[in-house]
Length: 487
Ligand SMILES: [Zn+2]
Image (cartoon, rainbow, N blue to C red; front, side, top):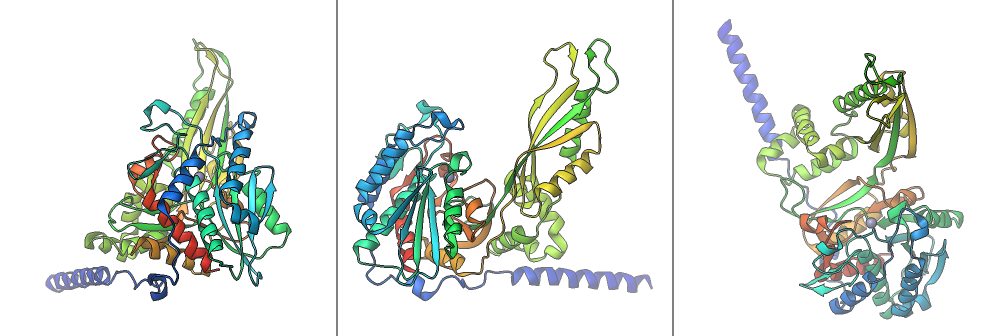
């Protein structure tokens, strides 16, 4: 009898192992549906952007200090106006043939009239930049727009003047070839993305909505072709992001007895608050490999080595393992769930005085699976202490999730692969806030810049030595030409 049981167990284990390995063996990428022969073939009458012209134009654009400051008053509006004048002077053909609306003074909404114009697409970039810190650490001064070592250097080189200039170059080349799209193309260059998009992208979305423009989809920043940035994957990955996280700060206010610190009670406002923060640390917001995160990682898993494919091909068995490994990495954790980050604390104003209130601000980045209301309620339940008030500050819901099977996504994927070769395309999630949170309210919003970046490039993002290669810039122009031609 015991032998039979042992045999049965051995056979079961063997069957299980076979199934796991079989699934892993067959867990390979489908032939790239997004890569058609047409997309791979050189386009007829291909327009060849001039790398020198493009690099020079981006260099000039970087030299305008279009810096967005949190305090509006210090925005140097003359720099914004000068940049707008420079655009008109540098791209005269475009300014003759497109209609242009200025929204809230500095955001530009161009319209390229199509032959049929029963629908439209929106291509967008922002031309404001974040301030520079540590200027002396830059290899080249951040607002010189140096062209050196096959790169264009300076604030905005990646984020996001490169896209703004690439859009202008692409449209100009197409215009000079006599091209007119079938459908309307709107190009928005916004001016306040770095401080919340209140007057830029929001106005663009409102304008299009109030004019009842049938916008099929929009494309704006939010990710890149990521080279060597996803653990376990050597092929570059074009992450075309279909959603972005929301933003919520909760202020926790703990109440306690004040008094002298020489004879403190068992519980003080500070200890009550500290206990709440510990509870939030010990209870990550529920999340997991599901929905968009699952779609993204199962796609990526097919390109990993056999060992990892065993895990991703058998999520029915290994989901908890994958989630625990991903959850231990900050970047992986941010994809799986709403993140929790206590950032500001305050208590008494004097070392020997007990505070009557102690406050903490906790910043959450909302995964699309959570809402401001559901998350706030969840926090209340976890803390479970009515001596603590919870107030929401600056809540912004996560975006809707745009389709990854519709035309817009497919066209963007096709052009990314035409320009950058056999890259992996996945739908992804932007973990910061972008202009697209307003575009997502009127259409399928996609978030992707058509340049390849690696970890070194990424360090320049809001950091020092921001730069883009001339090759990348030229390919970006080619990408937008292909995309505009498809409309
Ligand atoms: Zn940006």
